[in-house]
Length: 392
Length: 214
Image 1 (cartoon, rainbow over the protein chains, first blue to last red):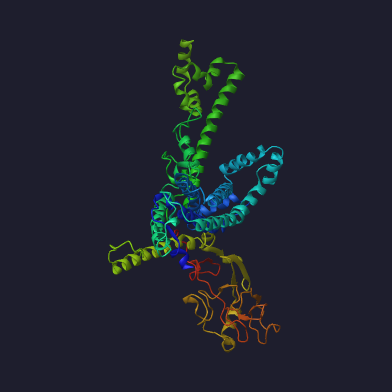
Image 2: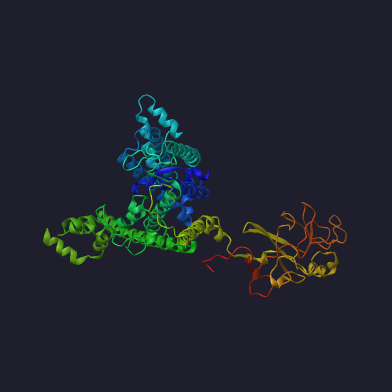
């Protein structure tokens, strides 16, 4: 067994491109281990999936870390695999006698895409649902059997509980087994033909007196140790992302909570107006943890009482604003009713929308908000009358 | 480590330096492996909501009639709360010879409960309702003289699974498969000196108290 490693000779001129195969294996093992621990808490099913993921992130000790490692690990898996494939293109490692090795690699790629896609559906957030919708509908383009195939994959007339639960089983058991098998075959195929190298020289053609390739070095200890260095550097980069930029600006995970916060708190307003006083906590710095979907990756998880307090504060603020709006609406309705009943045009003109149209700079003030305009209209009486007559 | 004959200028191998580097790398790797295991192992600990459910809970004792037992579920265990009458208390001293552990030396209870009554105030008995044999729920047999349990039965608990018998302080009788008295959890009674006092339950041994809320 040991001489499988020490007796196997690899070319001595491997460069940085040759790290990614072992790194891919490392990430695969990491995904399996984090996945095992996540599966202990995940509850598949339309009604329970999302909540179980939130439970994992907020309540389970280090649950946030497990989830981030798994999600960031999935993205890193693809980064590593693409760089691994790039090496094959750069140096022609797909060419004879390594065609089988390449084919197994392509099958791994296919299985990996399926595995990642199904894993993404499991938390059953918005991106999960619509991602599933789009990708499964792709199969509907197959002529003839398309629509029936799509219904068969989904298990229902639309994405639902059946889809989620079967994806859970495939993601956790079926595809990991298939992936493991394919990776094993990939490694066996490599062992059979030996590695290519940046110079493209077949090392087996130049053997020394002892029968070993003159341009080769035993895998152990040279490449085992070199790969350990690669693993160390990779894990450093991985840890930096997991602990400091897990969503990677929205590329790895949805940072939707943060973006919504910025819209609401008066960043770039898409609706054409902003609230005059923002709902929720007064701070408009949207980097604070309550505004981001993911909880703060600190080693002391937020306690239930603190979260409850924050939620109550936000709820209070929302209700305060609602009450204020209701008051203003009542004012406006009262004015309008009085106007209708008395047929008094003066009173009618006090209703806010008329005011805004005739005032100079009304367009500039459009962002002020309905409440401010109504309050202004309801407040003033006698002076407004004179001013309006002059303008008309 | 190359055996290739062409290399005449192979430098002398510094074995001690090599040993040091290997040991240092292996040591750092081992530390890294242990630290990596920490989140995985820690994730099996009770979650925040489990801890929150296990916070000290208050029990209103005024609802329990003297001579009656109330049970409730806390930290996944049945807790027995008995309001003992003076007759029940007087029966406790009479049968020390028939008990396996009359002084409660081998059983689990707080310091204040290492007395005959096994309680802070004798009229309130709090026990964990798990038979110390194999974990069934003991049934109440409070009526003294109940011959179906045993001769000279002073009143207490009877476990139907394998026949263990406990007295009105949870102490185990001779002849029971159980060998240890029923467990007495640490409690705190409210300041009121009347018998209708509130009690807080706080289990000290085993599980740590909630970390952040003190």
